[in-house]
Image 1: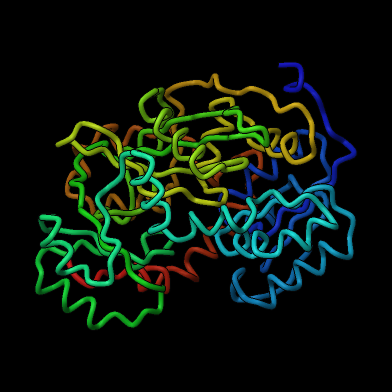
Image 2 (image 1 turned 180 degrees about the vertical axis):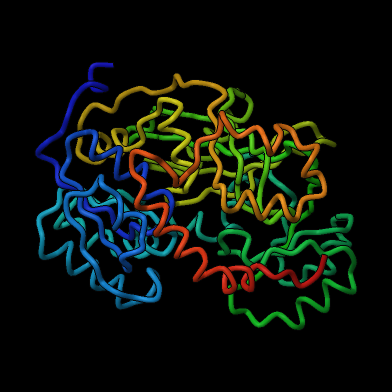
Amino acid sequence: MENSKKKYPNVSVLVFGAGGRQALPVCKGFYDLGCRVTVYCRSKTDTGYLTKYAHERILFKSDSMSSDEFLNNGANIIRSRKYDLVVPLGDMTAMYLSQNKEELSKYAKIAVNDWDKFKNVIDKTNTMLICEKNGIPAPRTIFTDDPVNEIKKLRISYPVVVKPKTGVGSIGFNIVRDEETLISLLNNYDNANGPLLVQEYIEQDGASQYGAELFRDRDGVIRAALVAEVARWYPIDGGSRLLSISIHDQEIVDICIQLVNALDWDGYANIDLVWDAKEKKAKILELNGRTGASVKLDFLAGVDIARLILENELGYTVTDMMEYEDGKQISCFLVDCLWFLKAKNRFTSKPSWFHRKPIKDVVFSWDDIKPTFGFIITSLQSFNGSMKKRKRYSN
């Protein structure tokens, strides 16, 4: 554990697209390592812009971090300034840097997988195919252009899940309960969120979702493997992690290691899983190619993702961080309030919604309070649009 005490004061890090909840633990992680941290943001209300754990702030005003103007300007910043390491946080920023990694790597180390690997996790169909070919547990998935007949052929029972192949944050997610509704959805889909993926629905009841945060170094060695039980998620019919609790589960670790090895994945991997009560096993849903808000749980449990990224990208010996603490909890209070309003089991859920003392918020911290105000403002401004994107076609 010698490296765990080492500082890197001469390393300059650009956090690319520092607007989400994950920006806070990531910036603090690099700051605590002694690095010079620069954040690239689109708004003065971005969490990364407001955190005290940044030495320099670069602002390019834009409606979205996925706009061509924001991304191309960021690339010019990488070319014109001297950074040792560039770390993308969002889906679009990570995808953009992956697509342009070969050229931008002339100027800095880019902490994202090469495009030939990254594209396999952007499209969930590719991930499911890799799971099927390697015997990795995953929901049965339709791989043909005729899902209605393929469901009959494979004898998959309704309901089924229909979601965009490249969707994020449960946007476009639908539980379809009969053939008639499936045909109607497919015929009326406007393709705004990309092509659709159809797969079997696995009933979610209680703590039936899990998350895993793995780190596989440049030599293919697993350096960290944290498992989280997802006690609450939002939207409640099938959404993103809300209340996550660190646990140990070797079975989940093993199938996640199978997946990252099959992908030859390099670095941090954020994996979502669902528990299939009928088959009594966890199944892979997707691997996210970017750093999610759940990364704060890693830091709380003793896994320093910032150190792992830095050491892996800059050629240092990568610290082993397989040991971590159970029982650490994170949630986002604003979203948890929405869950409380919608959930039928709001008063009987376990752990109790009212038992908040053990929970650390993914944004709020007395030590770094300004980002909380920015997050609230941004959330209120984007709430209607965000909920509209997540409107279900059928339930």
